[in-house]
Amino acid sequence: MNTRVKIDMTAPDRWVDMSGVPADPAVAERCRVSLIQAALTDLGAAKVVSASVNRTGGFQPPKPPWMMALDASMAGLTASQLPEVTGLPDFCDVRVEYTGAGGRVAEIAVWVPLAWNGRLGIANGWLPLWGDLPFSRPLTMPAALRNGFVTATTDSGNRDPRLFGWAFDETTGDLDHDFIRSWGYSAVHDMVVVAKAVTRALHGSPPEYSYMAATSLGGKQVLETAQRYPEDFDGFWAIDPGVSWTKAIPAGMWPALVMKEYDTILPPAKLEAFRAGAVAACDGADGLDDGFLGAFEDCLFEPRILIGESTEAGEITERDAEVMTLIWDGPRRHDGERLWFGIRPGVDFWSGYGLAMSPDFPGQLVPELSVDHFRWVTGDQKFDWRTLTFQSFEELFDRGVREWADIATDNPDLTRLRDRGAKLVISHSGDDGALPAEASVDYYQRVAGIVGGVDKAADFARLFVADGDIHSFSLGRGPGLTLAAGMAALMEWVENDNPPELLVAERRDPATGVVQATRPVHRYPTVTLYRGDGDPNDADSYVGAQP
Image (cartoon, rainbow, N blue to C red):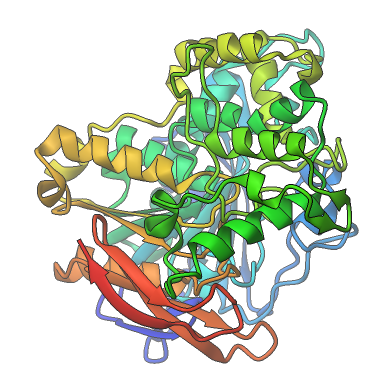
């Protein structure tokens, strides 16, 4: 075991210098089903089905069944298969079947490098973490392995092609609550237990440090693990997390519902005109590209200003402006009380990596994940979102919050995590079009309220909001956080007691990888300001930080 490796960022996905760490030939000799199975005897639910040494440097990722139901362009993937992974160090590839809650058998893969940095590094979620994801932030298996980590993933027992329809038993049509809880949190814990046991069997000792870093649904799982199983990891990084899941996901239906109820579909050209108008008025007029944390809070821009403006989809009408105002404002009760956060005017929520998109309803801006949420709430797998009204939306919203609290991921009491000395970093993209950054701010404020304020919370948990960045990928208006930046900062905090005051975001040329611009992202509650006009081609300069 080598825990003295140097933390040294050399690329967006490389931060551990493994050049001087030799491979252990004994690991290859131990890479046998019988030996590993004997080490897992205490885990009666675990069955080792295969173990083999991969010295090819490559790996062909399997295609998740649910991907068949998605438009491949959503993830930039071909319809036939995922791209082959290359540049991998030698490792023992272990596959385990684990019988979890409700009798579901999960397939767990554990990759154990022959040259090990002494650590476990894991992510999970619904993205294809088997493969490389350029400009992404989750700790994918290839990225973890190249940095010397033992790494693992689990399918949670889900081999259903339905994106979130898997929660319904295909035979009976009933919701499988045990399976949902497994998906929500217990399957990840099972995976960690198995990965640590496999590591001990092959390297002779457990990991000295363990980390989890994942985004979106994976970020939800990071927070859920931090709340329920803080002993599983020493360092947690929740990236653009699905915090307050039972509010954030149904709220994603709001734009489609407003358009339906007002019988006015806003096509992308008009949505972009409103977004660009807001950015021009509120983000660039004062010379500051201050996005989420700055001028938009006090901006007086109103969609009505654009009435009569021409777009490729026709002139913007008074009804268009009214619909846009309601969408930005967000879901409210009939008495005006806010149900959840709206959409910040500068955010693209309808294309790319936004929530309001679906392969089932092209051009209608309907998020399939939100549709499935309402199907879970009603227990009706054929529930038609078009039957929703403002009144029934409010009723089902409240019902979901009440009945699905078990998977809400909103418990702010992290005192167990604090007391065992673990550290948590939460980062959120200011221009996240899928999950609002305000949700992470709200959660962090509640965490701080439990322990006596932000200063006390900062002893074990810190929040960073990256202006201009988008959901999960560093391809937004502003430079974005990289996997290397976040992991290096987390490891420094956990292992060297050096808490991060700021993270450095960067923008790289997609073709050459050359750094085009950088920005410091200060920890909450500091507000970071930049001079620029919002143009992603400009190297906006850092102006200063204000509390």
